[in-house]
Image 1 (cartoon, rainbow, N blue to C red):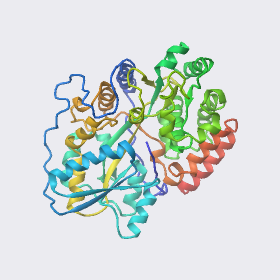
Image 2: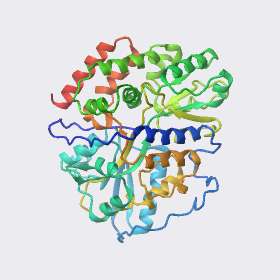
Image 3: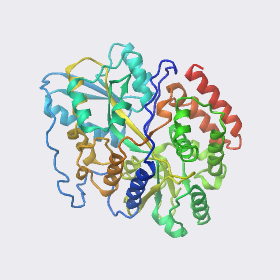
Image 4: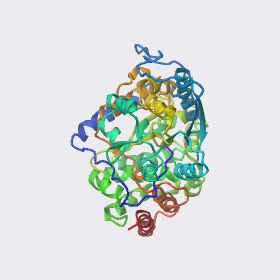
Length: 471
């Protein structure tokens, strides 16, 4: 999932809500059971092919439960960083909004970091009516700059009816709702080529130690074990966050996310040392460090599931949205492409989530109507049926998802309620945690290239974080 951040300082930022941790072990049991089921689910992935496994009501249009105004003649612009299948599927949602309201909606392709892109558009006097912001920090910055408009009463009613309090709070600043989290993600999954595992005699690992052993087993069979999209720095932040959450625990995770502990903390050293056990062995990374740093995220997925019995890699780590990229190959999710939870580094495996929030940037009736629609189960159902999408909308019928893989992940997300940890780098200032070639992205890319320099990596991370947070 693409990420951008806020440039606001700690003094001006609303700290992300600290979500409750008690009950996490029970929550993880639900999540792991769901993900475990994905490994044996023999279903297709991501296409709008009507494959619904016989679920009652699957494939049907959701009931039109949300009431929208007529907007005949009105024109709206919606900006997002989505491209390819994600953009195509979101466009289906916008087309339905057009059909119901009479408005005309134009999709505006944005670039990372999206806050900088929006700043240029706003300075030029042509802000999009709605922007899809891929992180908490970007919502906070849009509010601080007085770009964002509060969510109107109709959209608030949809949020209250359809969203757990945790998701509502993530879109709020100082108690006022500004963002509607339309798309969510489970960012703690490892996808693997089943044929490679079978040929190598490898098994799904449950712990980090087992993960490294599995990688060695696959490497001995002649296939590079792990594909890393290191050209996109956000993938490396996700590697770090999953290791850190499992190893250091939720309290440390929350503290580091808010820069209440420094990046020179011993817990960060331990997490980087753990990552170095993988990054430091060139034969375990497809193309070695140099190859990984030239590999963008989509390629990291495709090279894992193309090439027959000898692909360029056997495993790729990332969220449920990987299914969209797998769907562009000949691999079938559940048979050729399977998945297991990110291995436990500490006592429990991590569960990191992400999401994209819709924020109104103009005071138009159309912008508020679109927020209302995006907060409804109607809109969520359109993309859910198309595949490659998980919704935090608890009112959405799970039958809307096109296959058991996405259905199980979505049901597990809803079952988690308020008990989850949001992507750490998505909570940080944009200049540190969300800008290509800078801050955390650049420091972790340098670390991938030279994983022996843990102390140096910590020093660079802390220097950049302190500057970004204004401390």
